[in-house]
Each structure stands twice: as C-alpha cells, then as structure tokens.
Length: 516
Image (cartoon, rainbow, N blue to C red):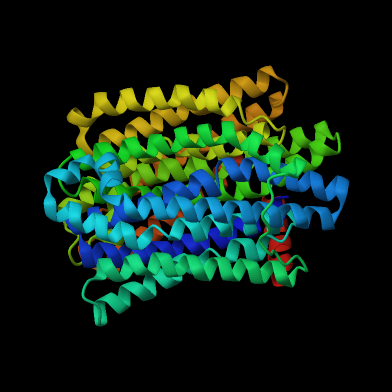
C-alpha cells in the first residue's frame, strides 16, 4: 500500500506544482481585487459540487461496493455495476447542471451575498460561473471512472489524468494574456475544457485495462439500490462539509474586496501537503481497507490504518509547522508579482498561518473517514458533520469581525481539530481503530522533532533575514527549507523514529520501482 501511496502522492505533488504555477499566473494577472474574487467564486461552485457528488458521498458508497463485487461476483459483474452507475449519474448531473445554469444569479446571491452590493463583481461572477459550471458534470463522471481504476489498483493513470486541469489552465491563461479579451474569461473556459480532457483520459485508461465503460440506465439492480441507500446519508454528510466551505465563502464575500482572493492563495499553499498526503491516503486506503474487511482480515485492516496515520503525520506535522514559520517569505516569493502587492502578500500569509494550524487535522480526517466508509457506515460521519457544521458557523461569526481574513481559516482549523477528535473517539470506542502504545510513543517523538525543526528554521530566519532581490530570495528560501528538512531528518534519526540505513533503503527501493 505504501508504494501505491507514493505513486498517488507523486502524481498529486506534480499536479499541485503545476497548480501553483497556474495560481502564480492568476495572482500576477488579476491581483487580489474584485475580478479575482469573482473568478474564484466561479471556480469554487463546480468544485464544491464535485466534492459532494463525485468525491464525497458517491466515492464513499461506490468504492466498497465495487471492491466487494470484484471479490465476490467477478470482474464482469463489477463492470456491469459500474456502467449502470455511470448512466444514472450522468442523467442526474446533466439535469442539475441545466437547473444551475438557469438559476445562477439566484445561486450566487446565496453563496456570495457580499457580491450583491457590488454590481460589477456580481455580474462578472454570474457570467464566469455559467462558463465553469458544466465542469462539475465532467469531473464527477471522471471521479467515477477514476474510482474504477483505483479499484482495479491502476493508480497511475487515475492520478495522472488530473494533471490536465492545471496544464490546460496554464495554457488558457496564456491565451488570455496574448489574444483574449480577459484572462478571467479565458481561465474560466480552461476549467471546463480541462474536464473534457480529464474524462477522456480516464475512459481511455479503462479501455486500456479492458474495462471500457458504456453508460447504462438502470435503477432496478440490487447493487444500484444499495448504492443509493448508502449515498443518501453520505450526501447529507458531504453536504455538511460543503456547507462548511460555503460558510467560509459567504463570510469572505462580506469582508473587504480581495479577502476571498488572499484566503484562496493561502489555502492553495496549504493544499500542497494537504492535497498530496490527504488525497494519497484517502485514495489508496479506502479500497485496501474494503478489501481486507470483505475478506474478514480485521487485524490487517487495523495495521493498514495505523501505518497510514503514522506515515501522514510523519510528513504533515513538519509541513504544518514549517508553513507557520515561513508563511511570509513563501507568499512573498511565490505570489508578490505583477498585480499582487506586498500588502496582499502579508494578508495572505496571515491566512496561511491559520490554515496551517489545522493541516494535520485536515489530513487525518481523510485517513480516519475511510474506516467508516469501508465498513459501510455512512451514517456516523453525518452526525459528526452536523456537529462540526454548527461549530464552524459559530466560530466564523465570532471571528469574522475581529480577525477579518484570518477568521474563516482559523474557524476551519479549529473545527477540523474537533472533527478529528470525535472521529478518533468513535472509531476507538467501536474497536475499529486500535492504536498500540508503541505508535503513540513514535507519534510523540515525531511531534517533538517537528517542533524542534520549527525552532531551528525560525532561528535561521532571524540570523539570516530574507534578501531584497528576487533571485536571491528564491535561493534563500530554498536553502532555509533544505536546512529545515535536513534538520528534521537528523532529529528523527536521533529520536529513533527512523534508522538512517532504513531511510536510504526505502528511497532506493522506491527509486528502483519508479524506474521499472
């Protein structure tokens, strides 16, 4: 499983790097003003629906059933099941898309109420949202095809296809710069075009695997009915999660112009480790857990779960502390170009620190939630989600005025910590999560090493301030990060978390497998 984790994580990291380049271009061209705000809301809307229908409730219900179908009924029945699901999904998504296109002005008055006070920003957001909205139909269908490929343990193509979003996005921005009427319009069209390419690549991957998916319509098969029954509470649970994101958006639109943008760029930096580690853990863990549980191998399921917790915290804790210490230089080096000013960069760095505080919790949620889904339990996350929804709303209302653009990120981080605590307790109480004392000691050592690394990096920044020239800033930041990573590795070895020989052997094995 670790090899699959690294495969997915590697492709996701490449996608995040390309996404960072795309965001740098957006920041330089659009800055952190009303046009950027309108574009970010237009992109966030289909992405919210994607997480709800394509990666949330659907994925949680479909993957265990698909894995069970392969184990118990064979590949032929599993393929037929996937084709029926694809047909039902496409009909539902197209209808929802048409409704959204018609009522887009009313939808934006709900999710971006602050825009209504600015006619120009509101009109632009409506126009851009109508361009980007079909993307959610394409990407939800792509998520189904990717889930099939993951269930077949073909993680390469399922992860690589998502590079298209950023590759086409970058190309669209350049088209907007060179010959388009507006970078925002070109970038919006790039979003929808990328959905076409991603779905096409994933369907091609299924065809290469001998698993060509042709949509079939049927609601009468037992597995389809079971899927719908499991999805219903999951839709509520995922809907709660998306409402949490919507609350952050609503609060952001009520803050001064540019707040949505500075929070977005901060979140994008936070998404580098979150997207890589969280996506890799969630993608690889769910089918493996479902397979072990379907075979009655509960001890193996516990071992896989614990290994995932260990692995993600080993990498996430130093990333979170590093982001909090280096927030200002990271944002300045990456985004303070063109229309994105020093003032914007400082505000975005403040938001980044608040997001980074909850980074380990955000990743752990993606590791703990599959333990419920793999057991067919989509109800419990609903109840937990209701609790987190209330907490996030209250925290946003309390923090929005005194902390402005820092309020929503901090509210999300605190709510995420509570989410992890509740999920952990429920799994432990039901004997679905067994943490040995040796793992607890190891995690404590990892946390201590990450704290020492943060102090070491902070001391280096104090003794060697960031230079003024841009090229020297890049070299300086790269050197600080390398020193921090090296210091963390040494601390892990000193604290007996890692053995030097084991680390070298693991890297050599992974390098050999990757090159094979």
